[in-house]
Image (cartoon, rainbow, N blue to C red; front, side):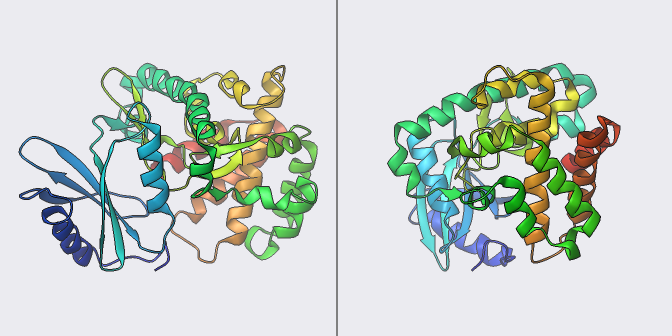
Length: 326
C-alpha cells in the first residue's frame, strides 16, 4: 500500500481496537479517531493515561523511522514509544500523548492574543534543532538505517544546483516563464551550493503542526516519519516558512550554515531560494493535483517575487494561507 492511498478508516479503527485490547495490553482502552495528516491517528484512553496510536502501511518506511526516533531520542525531544503491533496490512505505533496545542493551531486561532508566546515557542523550537541533529549524529548508524534522502541532494551530486533543477522542472506543470525564474534565482544564490553540501540527519517535516507547545511554551516534536538526510538548514527553513511574519529574527538560521558571518540579506536569500528550489521540484514531480496545489503554487510565486523585488506583502499573505490550508 502506498503512503498516499486513503485507507478504510472503519477497518483501521477495528484493527486499532484489536491491537489495543490484545498485543498492546491496554484492555479496556477507549479508541477515538483524531485528526491526522497523511496517516490515520487514534487517541487511546485508559482510566489513568492517554496514548496516541498511529497506523502505517506495513511496507512504508515511516513506522520504522517513528519507532527508532522515539526510542533513541528520549522524551525531552519526542513522545515516548510504548509499543508496536502488526494487524492486517498495517503497523500500529503506540506512543505517549503529548499535552498542549500544536503551533499551527496557535498561529491560526490564537495569534493575536498569543503572538509573543508563539514567537517564544518558535525560538525554542529553533534552539532545539542543533541538539536534535546532535542526537542523530551520536547514533548515526541506527538513524542511517531508516532515513530517507532529500530530493534536492541527488540533483546536485554531479552538477550545480541550477543545472540539476533545470533538468527536472516541467514546464507543463510550472509554466515556461516560472521555470526560467526558478533557475535564475537558484543560479543567483551563491550560498545554496555550500548549503546543499552541508548535510545531516534531519526531522524532515519540522513545521508548525508537528511542534507541540505546552502552557509554559515548552516544545516537543512529533511525527518523525520523514526522517531524512538533508541540508542542515532544511528543518529551520521549514519552521521559518510559517513563523517569519511574527517578527522572528532571521538570525535563528545562522547556526545551520557553515559561514557564521552571513548577513541578514544573504540568510533570507538562502532560505527562500531553498524554498523555491524544493517547492518547484515538488510540483514538477507530483503525479496528482491535490486540493492544496493552488496554495503551494501561490506561495512559490510569492517567494519568487520576494527574491526578485524584496516585496514581502504577498509572501506574508501566502504564508498565512498555506499555514491554514495544509
